[in-house]
Length: 261
Image (cartoon, rainbow, N blue to C red):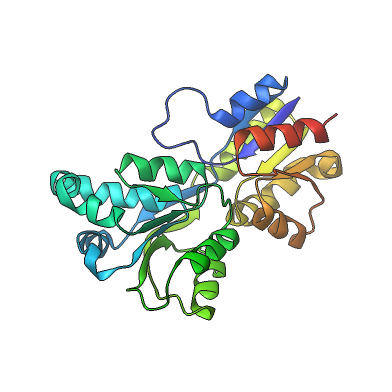
Protein backbone atom coordinates (compact mmCIF):
# COMPACT_ATOMS: atom_id res chain seq x y z
CA UNK A 1 0.00 0.00 0.00
CA UNK A 2 1.05 3.61 -0.54
CA UNK A 3 2.31 5.50 2.49
CA UNK A 4 3.04 9.23 2.54
CA UNK A 5 5.81 10.39 4.91
CA UNK A 6 5.70 14.11 5.63
CA UNK A 7 9.32 14.58 6.70
CA UNK A 8 12.68 15.96 5.70
CA UNK A 9 15.28 13.63 4.16
CA UNK A 10 18.05 12.61 6.58
CA UNK A 11 21.00 15.01 6.47
CA UNK A 12 24.11 13.73 4.78
CA UNK A 13 22.80 10.18 4.74
CA UNK A 14 23.45 8.25 1.59
CA UNK A 15 21.21 5.47 0.38
CA UNK A 16 17.47 5.12 0.93
CA UNK A 17 15.79 6.83 3.87
CA UNK A 18 15.50 4.33 6.77
CA UNK A 19 11.73 4.94 7.03
CA UNK A 20 11.20 4.04 3.35
CA UNK A 21 13.39 0.96 3.79
CA UNK A 22 11.57 -0.26 6.92
CA UNK A 23 8.13 0.20 5.35
CA UNK A 24 9.30 -1.67 2.24
CA UNK A 25 10.26 -4.61 4.46
CA UNK A 26 6.59 -4.70 5.54
CA UNK A 27 5.57 -4.65 1.86
CA UNK A 28 4.53 -0.98 1.66
CA UNK A 29 5.66 1.69 -0.80
CA UNK A 30 6.54 4.90 1.00
CA UNK A 31 7.16 8.34 -0.50
CA UNK A 32 8.81 11.21 1.30
CA UNK A 33 7.71 14.84 0.93
CA UNK A 34 9.68 17.51 2.82
CA UNK A 35 7.47 19.82 4.85
CA UNK A 36 9.89 22.29 6.42
CA UNK A 37 12.70 24.52 5.28
CA UNK A 38 15.35 25.86 7.62
CA UNK A 39 17.36 29.04 7.78
CA UNK A 40 20.32 29.34 10.12
CA UNK A 41 20.67 32.48 12.24
CA UNK A 42 22.98 33.91 14.96
CA UNK A 43 25.89 31.68 13.97
CA UNK A 44 28.48 34.24 15.15
CA UNK A 45 26.97 34.24 18.64
CA UNK A 46 26.79 30.45 18.58
CA UNK A 47 30.45 30.24 17.59
CA UNK A 48 31.49 32.52 20.47
CA UNK A 49 29.64 30.35 22.97
CA UNK A 50 30.99 27.08 21.57
CA UNK A 51 34.53 28.25 22.15
CA UNK A 52 33.85 29.27 25.76
CA UNK A 53 32.97 25.95 27.38
CA UNK A 54 34.14 27.25 30.76
CA UNK A 55 31.11 29.60 30.86
CA UNK A 56 28.59 26.76 30.60
CA UNK A 57 27.62 23.71 32.61
CA UNK A 58 26.95 21.55 29.55
CA UNK A 59 25.09 21.39 26.23
CA UNK A 60 21.56 20.39 25.20
CA UNK A 61 20.56 19.36 21.67
CA UNK A 62 16.97 18.41 20.87
CA UNK A 63 17.20 18.45 17.06
CA UNK A 64 19.62 17.45 14.29
CA UNK A 65 19.37 21.02 12.90
CA UNK A 66 20.92 22.53 16.03
CA UNK A 67 23.89 20.17 15.71
CA UNK A 68 24.16 21.09 12.03
CA UNK A 69 24.43 24.76 13.07
CA UNK A 70 27.39 23.86 15.31
CA UNK A 71 29.04 21.99 12.44
CA UNK A 72 28.58 25.03 10.20
CA UNK A 73 30.32 27.25 12.77
CA UNK A 74 33.30 24.93 12.94
CA UNK A 75 33.59 24.74 9.15
CA UNK A 76 32.89 28.38 8.32
CA UNK A 77 35.64 29.75 10.50
CA UNK A 78 38.01 26.84 9.94
CA UNK A 79 38.08 26.29 13.67
CA UNK A 80 37.74 22.53 13.43
CA UNK A 81 41.39 22.04 14.39
CA UNK A 82 41.10 24.18 17.51
CA UNK A 83 37.86 22.35 18.35
CA UNK A 84 39.43 18.92 17.92
CA UNK A 85 42.65 19.73 19.76
CA UNK A 86 41.18 21.22 22.94
CA UNK A 87 37.64 22.64 22.95
CA UNK A 88 35.65 19.42 22.49
CA UNK A 89 37.56 17.76 25.36
CA UNK A 90 36.56 20.60 27.68
CA UNK A 91 32.92 20.08 26.70
CA UNK A 92 33.28 16.34 27.26
CA UNK A 93 34.12 16.93 30.92
CA UNK A 94 30.53 18.28 31.15
CA UNK A 95 27.21 16.69 30.20
CA UNK A 96 26.06 16.79 26.56
CA UNK A 97 22.33 16.01 26.56
CA UNK A 98 20.43 14.85 23.47
CA UNK A 99 16.96 13.64 22.47
CA UNK A 100 16.86 10.71 20.08
CA UNK A 101 19.29 8.58 18.12
CA UNK A 102 19.58 10.78 14.99
CA UNK A 103 20.72 13.77 17.07
CA UNK A 104 23.04 11.58 19.16
CA UNK A 105 24.79 10.25 16.04
CA UNK A 106 25.44 13.80 14.76
CA UNK A 107 26.73 14.88 18.18
CA UNK A 108 29.17 11.95 18.14
CA UNK A 109 30.43 13.14 14.74
CA UNK A 110 31.48 16.36 16.48
CA UNK A 111 33.59 14.29 18.87
CA UNK A 112 31.21 14.78 21.79
CA UNK A 113 29.80 12.09 24.08
CA UNK A 114 25.99 12.33 24.14
CA UNK A 115 23.78 11.42 27.09
CA UNK A 116 20.07 10.60 26.92
CA UNK A 117 19.68 9.34 23.36
CA UNK A 118 17.01 6.89 24.54
CA UNK A 119 14.89 9.60 26.15
CA UNK A 120 12.95 10.22 22.93
CA UNK A 121 11.12 13.36 24.13
CA UNK A 122 12.10 16.71 25.66
CA UNK A 123 9.86 15.89 28.60
CA UNK A 124 11.77 12.72 29.51
CA UNK A 125 15.12 14.41 28.82
CA UNK A 126 14.29 17.26 31.20
CA UNK A 127 13.69 14.73 33.99
CA UNK A 128 17.10 13.16 33.33
CA UNK A 129 18.78 16.59 33.47
CA UNK A 130 17.00 17.54 36.69
CA UNK A 131 18.07 14.25 38.29
CA UNK A 132 21.71 14.69 37.30
CA UNK A 133 22.44 18.40 37.54
CA UNK A 134 23.18 20.62 40.47
CA UNK A 135 21.43 23.98 40.80
CA UNK A 136 24.66 25.94 41.26
CA UNK A 137 26.28 24.95 37.94
CA UNK A 138 26.95 27.54 35.23
CA UNK A 139 23.99 27.60 32.79
CA UNK A 140 23.45 24.69 30.40
CA UNK A 141 23.60 25.98 26.82
CA UNK A 142 20.67 25.06 24.57
CA UNK A 143 20.93 26.02 20.86
CA UNK A 144 17.44 25.51 19.38
CA UNK A 145 14.96 26.33 16.63
CA UNK A 146 12.45 29.17 16.44
CA UNK A 147 9.52 26.76 16.94
CA UNK A 148 10.73 25.07 20.08
CA UNK A 149 8.27 23.81 22.63
CA UNK A 150 8.64 25.25 26.11
CA UNK A 151 8.53 21.88 27.89
CA UNK A 152 12.26 21.62 28.57
CA UNK A 153 13.03 25.27 29.46
CA UNK A 154 9.98 25.39 31.75
CA UNK A 155 10.82 22.15 33.58
CA UNK A 156 14.43 23.23 34.16
CA UNK A 157 13.40 26.69 35.29
CA UNK A 158 10.85 25.31 37.74
CA UNK A 159 13.52 23.05 39.21
CA UNK A 160 16.14 25.77 39.45
CA UNK A 161 18.53 24.34 36.81
CA UNK A 162 20.16 27.33 35.04
CA UNK A 163 19.67 27.43 31.26
CA UNK A 164 20.68 29.71 28.41
CA UNK A 165 18.89 29.31 25.06
CA UNK A 166 19.89 30.66 21.64
CA UNK A 167 17.77 30.41 18.49
CA UNK A 168 20.12 29.12 15.77
CA UNK A 169 17.61 28.22 13.05
CA UNK A 170 14.21 29.39 11.90
CA UNK A 171 11.60 26.95 10.65
CA UNK A 172 9.25 27.77 7.78
CA UNK A 173 7.01 25.88 5.39
CA UNK A 174 8.87 24.21 2.51
CA UNK A 175 8.36 26.41 -0.58
CA UNK A 176 7.29 23.45 -2.79
CA UNK A 177 5.09 21.72 -0.23
CA UNK A 178 1.70 22.28 -1.87
CA UNK A 179 3.01 21.56 -5.37
CA UNK A 180 4.70 18.31 -4.24
CA UNK A 181 1.55 17.16 -2.44
CA UNK A 182 -0.63 17.85 -5.49
CA UNK A 183 1.79 15.92 -7.72
CA UNK A 184 1.79 12.99 -5.31
CA UNK A 185 -2.02 12.79 -5.23
CA UNK A 186 -2.18 13.09 -9.03
CA UNK A 187 0.34 10.29 -9.57
CA UNK A 188 -0.37 7.92 -6.65
CA UNK A 189 -3.91 8.77 -5.59
CA UNK A 190 -5.02 8.98 -1.94
CA UNK A 191 -2.47 7.17 0.28
CA UNK A 192 -3.50 4.33 2.63
CA UNK A 193 -1.57 6.01 5.44
CA UNK A 194 -0.01 9.42 6.13
CA UNK A 195 2.69 9.90 8.77
CA UNK A 196 3.43 13.22 10.46
CA UNK A 197 6.84 13.88 12.03
CA UNK A 198 6.37 17.19 13.87
CA UNK A 199 3.65 19.50 15.20
CA UNK A 200 4.69 22.18 12.67
CA UNK A 201 4.38 19.56 9.91
CA UNK A 202 0.76 19.04 10.95
CA UNK A 203 0.08 22.79 10.88
CA UNK A 204 1.65 23.29 7.46
CA UNK A 205 0.16 20.23 5.68
CA UNK A 206 -3.23 19.54 7.11
CA UNK A 207 -5.35 21.93 5.09
CA UNK A 208 -3.83 20.76 1.74
CA UNK A 209 -4.12 17.08 2.72
CA UNK A 210 -7.78 17.54 3.68
CA UNK A 211 -8.54 19.33 0.42
CA UNK A 212 -6.77 16.75 -1.79
CA UNK A 213 -8.21 13.72 0.04
CA UNK A 214 -11.80 14.96 -0.02
CA UNK A 215 -14.30 12.37 1.14
CA UNK A 216 -11.61 9.69 1.37
CA UNK A 217 -9.96 11.50 4.29
CA UNK A 218 -11.70 9.26 6.83
CA UNK A 219 -10.25 6.12 5.21
CA UNK A 220 -6.63 7.25 5.65
CA UNK A 221 -4.71 5.79 8.61
CA UNK A 222 -2.93 8.75 10.20
CA UNK A 223 0.33 7.97 12.02
CA UNK A 224 2.41 10.06 14.44
CA UNK A 225 6.15 9.79 15.15
CA UNK A 226 5.61 10.57 18.84
CA UNK A 227 3.28 11.94 21.54
CA UNK A 228 3.85 15.66 20.79
CA UNK A 229 2.92 15.22 17.13
CA UNK A 230 -0.02 13.02 18.13
CA UNK A 231 -1.35 15.76 20.45
CA UNK A 232 -1.18 18.32 17.64
CA UNK A 233 -3.04 15.96 15.25
CA UNK A 234 -5.77 15.29 17.81
CA UNK A 235 -6.06 19.02 18.50
CA UNK A 236 -6.62 19.61 14.76
CA UNK A 237 -9.43 17.04 14.80
CA UNK A 238 -7.58 14.18 13.07
CA UNK A 239 -8.23 10.61 14.12
CA UNK A 240 -4.78 9.16 14.93
CA UNK A 241 -4.59 5.46 14.03
CA UNK A 242 -1.15 4.81 15.52
CA UNK A 243 1.84 6.40 17.23
CA UNK A 244 5.38 5.02 17.14
CA UNK A 245 6.42 3.58 20.49
CA UNK A 246 9.82 5.25 20.00
CA UNK A 247 10.78 7.81 17.32
CA UNK A 248 12.63 5.33 15.08
CA UNK A 249 12.01 3.93 11.59
CA UNK A 250 11.51 0.41 12.99
CA UNK A 251 8.88 1.45 15.52
CA UNK A 252 6.93 3.69 13.14
CA UNK A 253 6.93 1.11 10.32
CA UNK A 254 5.70 -1.60 12.72
CA UNK A 255 2.90 0.67 13.99
CA UNK A 256 1.76 1.61 10.45
CA UNK A 257 1.93 -2.01 9.23
CA UNK A 258 -0.23 -3.08 12.17
CA UNK A 259 -2.77 -0.27 11.59
CA UNK A 260 -3.08 -1.25 7.91
CA UNK A 261 -3.72 -4.95 8.57
